Image (cartoon, rainbow, N blue to C red; front, side, top):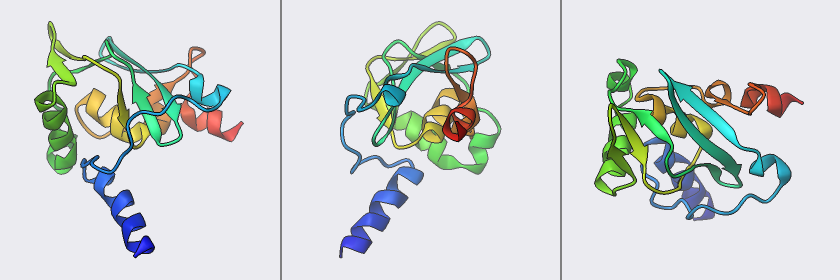
Length: 139
């Protein structure tokens, strides 16, 4: 039964369903507390890593329109629609805005919602010096 539950916990976030994901936990280490930035077309989102994934902070911006890759991966569309329905994302002037901090199960899931289509979170999220998560993880 524990194996089954573990598989469900892995599968649901990949499908854009974050029912079993705990509410955002505070950063546990200096690496987790480091601010990270995800940008697209002049829009900027700010977040930090958590033990469960990544938290996108309130007032972060996201693309208003969907990219063509969203058609191939409907979980991105579903996740964005759910965040709008829940009031986490609201329309701003030409973009979406996070009204409160929101934790995603992975940097890629957060980047996909911000970009409006699939995105590699390990390259989309960067620190203040412009170093990607991929680079920071290899150090």
